[in-house]
Length: 106
Image 1 (cartoon, rainbow, N blue to C red):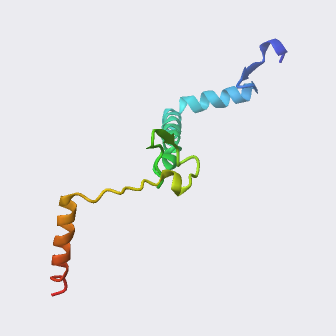
Image 2 (image 1 turned 45 degrees about the vertical axis):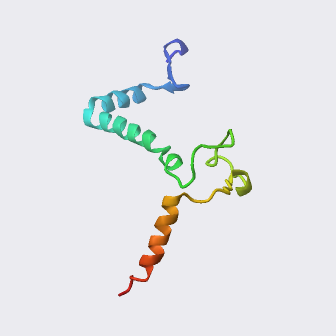
Image 3 (image 1 turned 30 degrees about the horizontal axis):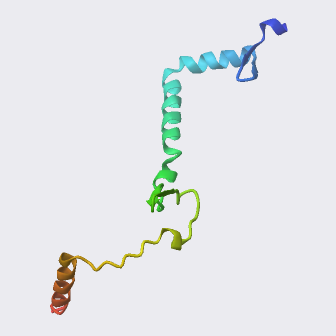
């Protein structure tokens, strides 16, 4: 084969036997489309572990954005210390739980 007639695909030289194998694979419609479906599902699921983890992707705290999934931050940086008392509804709910706690186990 002369260099002028040599075909290349993704930097690789395409030999006549490689071209024939590709034509045979393309003629097998079920295998060809199954390969594309498999590749699509594979590339959709690759970032799944990144998205569905136990750490938040983005946190906004005190006007700053933090990315805990990428870097580790000290707890003192992201800790929100509130000096407010709980609202009345929460206090009433907690007292009703205390009253009801004696009725358990009867």
